[in-house]
Image (tube, rainbow, N blue to C red; front, side, top):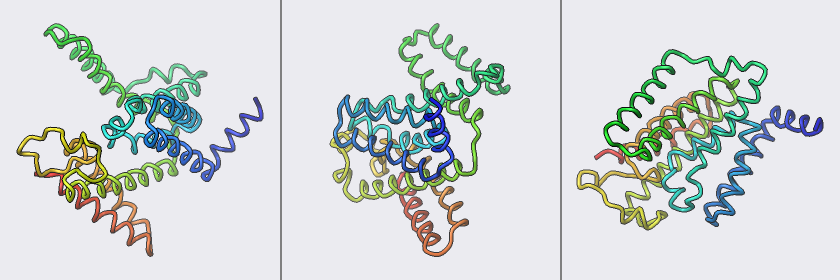
Length: 263
C-alpha cells in the first residue's frame, strides 16, 4: 500500500506523467469511438474514473473535450452518454475522501448556493403540481445538479496555475477542432466527416444556413467558440515566435466558425 501511495504521489508531482496518463485516457476514448460497444465504453469509463479519482483537477479537463461535442459522441457510441457523470462522480469521491477529517467543510455553502437549492426545490414542486411527469423533472434536475457538482467540487480542490493552463489549452484545442469541422460542415453541407444523422435531422428554415457542428446546436457551438477565442487571445499574449503565429491562426479559424453559427 505504501508503494502504491508513493507512485500516486509521484504521478501528482510529475507533469509528464500526468500528460502521459491523460493521453492514455484519450486513447481509450478514441477506442470507444472507433470500436463502439459496451465493452470499449466500460473500459474507457474505468480508465477515466481512475484518472479523475487520482488527479481530479486534470480529470475535469476532459469535460472541456466532452460536453461541446456530446451529441456526436453519443451518436457514435450510446454508452458514452454518462461520461460526464463518471468524471463528476470520481472527482466528488476524491473531495469526500480528502475532506474526511473535516466534514464540516462539505456543508459550507454560499448564499447563492442556497438560492439554487431553493430554485430546484420550488421549481420541481411547481412542475409536479402542474402535471409535468416525474421523469421530465428528474431529467432537468440532473442537468442542473451535474453542473452544480462541478462547481461544488472545484471550489474544494486546490486549483493550481498548471491546472488553469491545462483548461486554457484544452479549450483552444477543442475550439480549433470544432471550428475546423464546422467549416467542413458548411462547405460539404454535412456530408463529409459527419454521421448520417447530421445530414438528415430537421432544421427550421431560419436556421438552414447556420453551422451546427458536433454540438448539433448552433447556439451551444457559438458559446463555446467565443470562449475558445478569448482563451486563444490570452495564449497569444503569452507566446512568441511560431507559437505566437499559430495562436493567430487559431483565433482566425475559431472566429470564422463562430461567425458561421449566426443566421
